[in-house]
Length: 175
Image 1 (cartoon, one colour):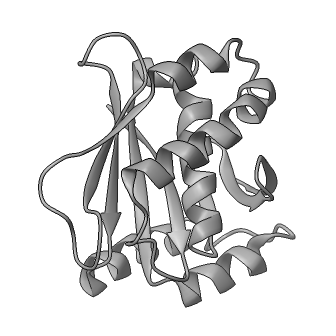
Image 2 (cartoon, one colour; image 1 turned 45 degrees about the vertical axis):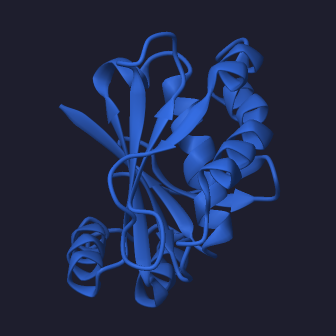
């Protein structure tokens, strides 16, 4: 079973290179590790490699792999969706989840969904949600959401907004 963290972007992040993403994660991971109660982000940063997987997507990167642990079998898959139909489907599902919400942050989230042009999904296996994998994925999504003038949607957590180079603000629970 997979868990998904998404960056919902109101402008394209297709020009993000693997090096850009790695640097963005490295800048944010120390704070995200503290926020989620994990130790030693520096060891993870030292091991972190961001590699393309397959061909580039429409107007930029398609799939990247975040290799963060010892051994090549541990990675997070990062997939950018810029095709209009795929984005519309993703946004529709996210909007459906908000139908019953009356929380204060819902208007901000709905405005982002209305303006979104692409999404980037980070896939975690259950084993990745324990330890540094979760803060790593949030750091990646925060970098992408900030670059794409958007928000972060994390399954089982809710909606977050990137705030500066190393922080996020919780906007809405995932009810």
